[in-house]
Each structure stands twice: as structure tokens, then as C-alpha cells.
Amino acid sequence: MLLSDIWRRFAKNSAMILGSRVTFGVLNLASNAVVIQVFGLVELGVVLLLQAYTRLFSEIVKFQSWQAVLRFGATAQERGDHVGLCRLVGFTLALDLVSFAIAIAAAVVLVPWAADWFEWPDNVSSFAPFFVLSLIFITHATPNGVMRLFDRVDTLAIQYSLNSLVRFVGVCAVTVLGGDVIHVVLAWFAGSVLSGTYLFVVTAREMGRQRL
Image (cartoon, rainbow, N blue to C red; front, side, top):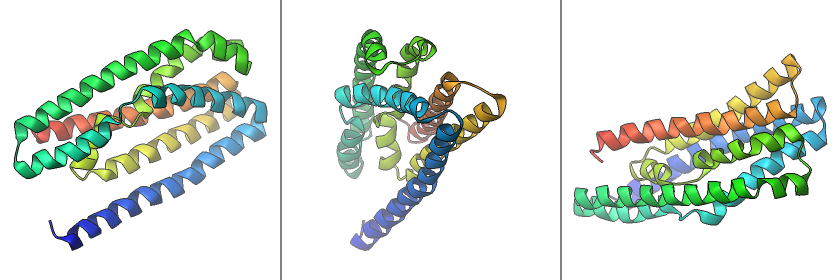
């Protein structure tokens, strides 16, 4: 691949991701503003602390499998080593599954401590063990690497956009229907799960197309 082609591809992908982050980052701010105005700053803090708690375990155990797919997968592609690429993706997926299992187990075990420390409401504390399952959908894992490897960065931009949209629509619905902070938590959870599921589905299709 020529240097000019590489630069053009990099510029296009960077602009796509940055544009999505900026545009829908504003939408995320709007979601937070609605929560503050309708429910209060304390309730927003409950939601953000639960999200941060989940991300903490995601960061602790992840193996940066997407980087391995991107780095070694590109080398396998250049050599035409299809079998090696298949094995690489299978290996990183196995690492993801193990890391997810460890992270979820640790997070669930420590939920009572976190609930007491952060003073979560009872209904939020009861849902927290289920909320931590969302780390499967927010961790940059093998699907992220596969999409980057096959130049499907648009999928990553759409995933972020979908997450922001679901949160905003969910928060607005909670406001109109007179919900509680637990319903805001559910909106955040739905955003992570639906956007992550979209990425998984597109990745599965791309892997099928690439005979992986």
C-alpha cells in the first residue's frame, strides 16, 4: 500500500471517529443535563459512579486483544496466512471470554461493598450485579480489532453514536413518564448493550465474509 493511500485512510478514519465523538459527545452532555435538571446532581452521580465501577473492572482485566488482532492480523494478511489469522482471532476471543468472566465475577462479588461505599439506593444496588454485565459490550476487545483490521471504522463510529442516542431517548422517556434514578440506570445499560450488540452482529457478518 502506498504511503499516500495509508495517509488518506488514516485521515478518513480519524475524521469519522472524531466527528462522531464530538457530535454525540454533545448529546451525552445533553443527557446529563436533563438528568441534573429533572432528578438532581446526586442522582446523576449515582449513575456515573455505577458506570465508572463497571469500567474499572473492564480496564483491570482486559488484554488489549483488539491491538493484537490489528498488529498481528495485518502481518498475517500481508503473508496471505489465512489459517494463522483464523487462529489469532480465535485465540483473542478466548482471552476475551476469560477476562470477561473474571471481571464480572469480581465486580459482582464486590457490589455490596461498592453499594455501601457509594451509598447507592437499594433498587440501584439490586440491579448493579446485572449492570456490570455491560462491560462485555463496552470493552475494546476482539470485535473492535476485527473492524479496524478490515477498515470498518464506520462501525465503531456508529456504535458510539447509537449508544449516545439510546441514552438520550431513554432519559427523555424517563422524564416524560416520571421515572426514578433506576430507570436512568436502565437507559445507560440499554445504550451499552444495544450499541455493543450492533458491533457484535456486524463483526460476525464481517468474519463470515472473510471466512474467519
